[in-house]
Image (cartoon, rainbow, N blue to C red; front, side):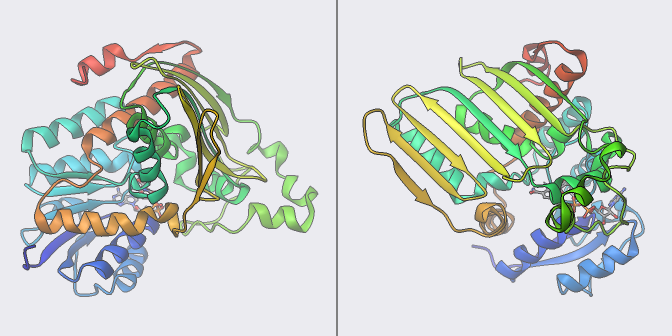
Length: 380
Ligand SMILES: NC(=O)c1ccc[n+]([C@@H]2O[C@H](COP(=O)([O-])OP(=O)(O)OC[C@H]3O[C@@H](n4cnc5c(N)ncnc54)[C@H](O)[C@@H]3O)[C@@H](O)[C@H]2O)c1
């Protein structure tokens, strides 16, 4: 392992950047921040203090971070709609890039990013943190061992708690012009896992959903549920300013169900909702010779071969099932050794495209055929 310092530029210094960069710097003392940009000076200050990087250069434009001669990597943590300009400028300036998911908010922008990565041949790391979580690595190992035969069908969900849903409906995520649809912004992690587990891509998708809870007419709901209900909807604070999650202007939806047919023949379903007393992030794998169920809130994995006793494994990780700790380790290794970490541009491209196609299917009320899109993107 090389010993020289790795210097990084950071674009967007909000909540996620603070967490990822702090873990990275705490794990690797060879890595340090060279420059930062965020339009909100208070968040820059907060970030530099949290990462003990007060000596870093504070830039007034993202281009100055992208072109920072002292940095070899740029890390992008801006809202999703800005990812394309930030990532492409960084590749064009010769930097390796880590970007948070999703890649971008349109298929065209995803393509621009992916093309810039391929053209420049620089390393592209993406923040699909669940690929680093021990529970999902174990699930992948079990599937690959063949003990359960092959996946026939799967059903996955991301049904989050009221405080998390309320945060989304207060934050920039409530507007598709910044975040893209909820299924993209939040669930691209899960859709990426399904691509990984099936070793395939959806060929066709259909989808239904709407906005039926976080509406002005339901603003009295937390109050009606009493003290416990009020607490259940509170808790997640938006540093950009508090709003009523029911009355806020928004154009994303709060419930969606999608059906997928993978190229491999696997059928799948995906359920996403934003206010649940029993939150669940679950994948049910119906396999030819057995069954497996993963659930991230409880960090449990159950599996059995047909006719045999069920085994249950428990995991104990902090945020994202421990994925953030592993990501800091493996991303740092990739930076120091100039190598590709486990989650890259292809994962970013494919999961974003699946999510965007699902939302397109919902809006059109039609089955969307992804094959022409995959062909255009070179995913044959
Ligand atoms: N992998 C994960 O599990 C995970 C978790 C949370 C967030 N994220 C992703 O991280 C990114 C940031 O999310 P967050 O939770 O930190 O949001 P946040 O609201 O906490 O921070 C966003 C930051 O971007 C800044 N910003 C706004 N416009 C900008 C611009 N034009 N250029 C640069 N910066 C700009 C804001 O001032 C703010 O500081 C998003 O893409 C989000 O999807 C990923």
